Amino acid sequence: MSEIWQHVSERRYSRVMKLGMSAEMLGILVLSVTLFAGVPIVFTLSLGVGALLIVVGLLSWLWGLVWGRE
Amino acid sequence: MIAEWILALAAVVVLVPLVALRSSMRTRATLGRRLFTFVAMVALPGLWLLGMFVHADTSMRKTSFCLSCHEMQPYGSSLTTNGEETLAAAHYRGGRSDRDKACYVCHTKPGIAGYVDAKLRGLHDVRVHYFGEIPERLSIRGGYDVSICLECHAITENFRDVDIHDAVMTDIETGAVTCLDCHGPAHSIPGPGGDARGHEDGVEAALSSDRATGPTEALLHSDGATGPTEAPLHSDGATGPTEASLHSDGAIGLADAYAGEDGEIGE
Image (tube, rainbow over the protein chains, first blue to last red):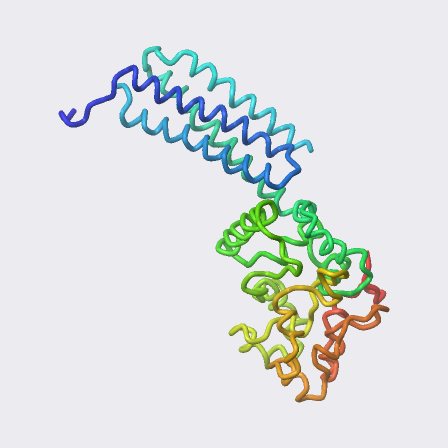
């Protein structure tokens, strides 16, 4: 492993991953609103915000894969 | 409604492993643990997100979704109750387009680009609906794209058998002539915000004060047929706008094509 390539600390890894999971959980809840929303703006916002939060969670997993623990 | 409940149940199924994973973050990263992390954080949420997008996309294509904004309701009414045989009503009542997706089918350009364009326009419309100023007369920004009509009609015999379609095809492709110039109006909107002729940009262009000198008018009049201004909608539904403009060469009009076997345009 190169000197430049240093895995992040356990604490930081845990924090970022927890943040990502929280974002995903919140995203799932927010996105679920679209299932029963009849108002277009609620539908549109929950779809956009929910998807964004889930994507944040997916990116945190990717970050953990690259910079996470060995 | 079943799909909604299935997706809601699936949301719980996706949430459970996420909660379990989050509450045990400090365990050793074994292969099984990494696999579980992948399933909980990527596979399940990803699949669920995909399902939600499909569901949302299906919901947003529905006519009822489009008509949930009050300013769209007159256009929805024009499909069914206004009693005039407009182009949209002919499509809707005759069942020539999927009634459940009537707005989407006729207002979305073909292809992926058209889909993206429809989404962007929809976002704009939502913004205007809630935060902007709704104009008294609605119109389609950039005008109505005839490629939407041609996507279905260009390959039909009813379209190809009409000689004038060949004559104006170049003009149609360049945008000088739209289908609505002859076959409009698309909708019939009564009241102060509308008139009996509809509000598509193409229609408005055709019905402007100088419409008598428009290209379609000239083309149609050269063979003695009547132009769009002389082909109004008929309150008795006896003839459609196309009938007046194209029948001189024996071709059938759109209203005829859309009429049922008994000649009626109805449910």
